[in-house]
Every structure is written in C-alpha cells, then in structure tokens.
Length: 453
Ligand code: FAD
Image (cartoon, rainbow, N blue to C red; front, side, top):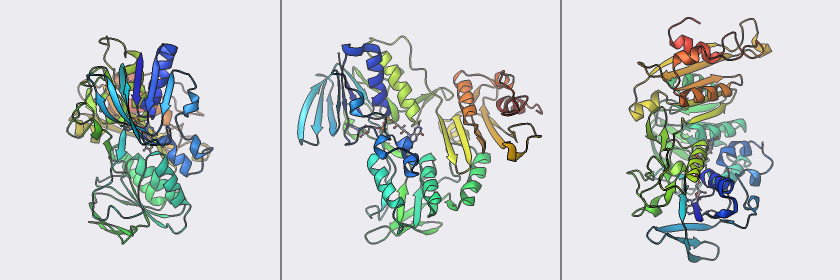
C-alpha cells in the first residue's frame, strides 16, 4: 500500500501518525512538502516572538528524523504540481535538484493548507509588508522586533493572528495600530459584549484599534511608510497582514473539484471527486456540528481530527460512518485577559444563515467573600442556543482568571448537542478555592433559562 501525503503541517503530520499506528510496516508513506523547513508550527509563533520557546527550530510539529522508519519518506523542497488520477501518478518538482519526477500512489491525502492574503492594493510591492505564517515569516518578524528603527507597526486584521502580532509588538514597546474592515476586534470569534471588554484592554495597553476602516493604499518609496485608510493615514515602518487566507489549490484546478473560492470540495467521507484522493485541513471547508453544514474553520485541531478519520477509513470501499464534524474551538490571551470560544457566535451564525439566540452572563468566579487579591475575578460567559430546542450551538468564556478549560467543557456540550437544561444542572465540582456552589457554566445556563442564579 503506497500512501502519498501533500503538506507537512498538522494534517500531514497526523496522517503519518495514524498510518503508522494502524498499519505499521504494511504501508509505504511518502510526504511531499514544498517548503524547506519541515513542519513549522505557526500556532507557536507568538511564543517564539516573545522569547518563550527553546529555539525557533524546535517550534514544529515534527522533524524528519522523528520518523526513522524505512517505510516513511519525508521529502522537503518537493512541490507536487499535478495529479494524474487515471494512472494514480503525481508530478513532483524537486526544488533542490531542479528536477521533475513522477511518483505513483494507491491513496493520496491532500493537506496543502492556505497562504495568508496579501491585499492587492497600490504599494503592495513595497518592502516591510509582511505576512504571519510559517518559518520564514517568523524569522523576518523576529528580526524586526529586534530592530529599534522599527517603531510604528501596523497590523491588518483583528482575528487571533493579528491580535497575537499586535500584542507582541506592543509588549516590545512599539507604537501599534491594528486595523480591520469589520466593526469590532476579534469580531468573528466573539460577540460584542466580549469584544468591548477586549477592545478596552487592547487600548489600555497602548494598541490603537481602528475598526470599520477601508484601506486604500500602502505608501512609501522603497519601504512602506504609511497605511492609508478612510479613517486617516497611519505611519508604518512595518506592516503585518493577517487579513484572511487563500487555499493552496491553484495547482489542482481542472483535476480536483474546487468551490468558487478555491476550497477543495469533499464529501461526507472527506473524499474528493477523484478516486482514492482525500483532503483535510485548512484547504477544505469543515463540517460544523452546530451549523450542520460545512464552513471555513481553519484550525490545527480540525486538520488533525479530519486526518485521523481519513486514515481510519482509507482502505475501505465506503466508510460505514461519515466524518462526525467539529465544533471549532479557539483560545487566546489578550494582555491580562484570556478567552475560549467554541461553536457558533452571532457573526458566524449570521454568515452561515443559522438562527440563534444568545445570553450574556457576568459574575465572579468564586464566592463574593473571596477578594480579588486572593484570586477572585470577574467572569463573562456568552451562550448561543437554538430558541426552540435550547440545543447549545456555541459560546465563550472570558476572564482575567484561568478559565479557558471551561471553554472545552462548553465545546463538549456543543459537540454532544446538549441543551441549556442539561448544562444548567450538570454536576460540576464546587470548591471555593476554584469556583462557586454552582459552577460558572451551570450559572450561565440557568441565567439563559431566565432563572436568577
Ligand atoms: P498548513 O498548515 O496550511 O500547511 C500546508 C503545507 O502544505 C505547507 O507547509 C505548504 O508548504 C504545503 N504545500 C502546499 N501545497 C503544496 C504542494 N503542492 N506540494 C507540496 N507541499 C505543499 N490553530 C489552532 O488550532 N490553534 C492555534 O493556536 C493556532 N494558532 C495559529 C497561529 C498562527 C500565526 C497561524 C498562521 C495559524 C494558527 N493556527 C492555529 C491555524 C493552524 O496553523 C492551521 O489550521 C493548520 O496549520 C492547518 O494545517 P494544514 O495541514 O491544513 O495546512
């Protein structure tokens, strides 16, 4: 059995692990990676930029030498340019030898991921306009952090990647402006009650937050000097673009079915239109359990769960179960706050056309007799649910206390399609060193049911 994998990131890595677990030596695995550096973990980029990792070359999912098995071949600098599905053959360009080779497979797993968008604006070719993904950009951003001539930094995009970039440069004492076309920072992850709190937190830490803005141009002669918008011009020695992504699928045009925006189309078994070719990860849309449909959920967690499912059923004619889907969960620190969000929110549900009702609950984590100095903290919970059935569709927790694990509890509730009533009296522990007589999520669900907790 010859299995080819394209892309050495989360989807590719998980595919190798699963193949070895399930088939051991009975499978021949070849992974093709177009890039030079195998499996940089962008999720760890913020920690690297903050000097909180052992070494940049350790910030990766795996090294080729982690797979010394004779039946595993990991080929960096090998870009796959074509699939010949009739003959089950790949065309592969070896960028080191500058040679083109052919490679046959029995099964093919695509995890070719995405590339950040470079906005097609006047001045886009100026120097010091950076993207934030992968090893090379990580090194370049780090060099700018260490360059004192870089004082004004403009970040485009207030998703979690943009917030990570803004935070790193603000902590390093730079003047940071973060710009978004939508009207709230982190507005695709959290509803307004929480983004209001985080906007204030960003501003308190010196980040200039500009929302609802239209960028018209990057100005400068050789290097960028300003970002022009309809809300003014922002002086910039460095621009970091974190405003959306495009799938790495142009090379598949005409062979693998793509949707209008270039995402790989997969069926309920994560199989493409080509026989024996599956696709996982950011280059595909993910089945959202609460939405009951596919939507963009670009997370490492999703790529890994999809790869696990694909390999489990790789050699079956037709799997007996479809991929069960994901909820899509993320967590982030924003200076002194941390949040975890899962499933749908008002923004993503609106986009997916899913009606939902929400409830915002605010309280203290521990009994009121515990003062803030002893670790008590304000906590905020947002729950999203179906108005008729009360099925939980999503939610978020936010606090200065360490409560992100409660986001995972909520993720489990959403995945298991529990209701507000289930969550309202789920049996969670009580110990005043950690929580209240009723735990935070119990209280939030009771509040959503109209009770006065
Ligand atoms: P990708 O990571 O996009 O990798 C695809 C790989 O395929 C690339 O290495 C590319 O070079 C290669 N490739 C593409 N085309 C070809 C070809 N034709 N031939 C050979 N090779 C090819 N997710 C989380 O869950 N938690 C986080 O905390 C988190 N933080 C993040 C922080 C940052 C800054 C960024 C950028 C992303 C973060 N993510 C996080 C998202 C996560 O990194 C992605 O969801 C995940 O990497 C997707 O994995 P993938 O396998 O689909 O593809």
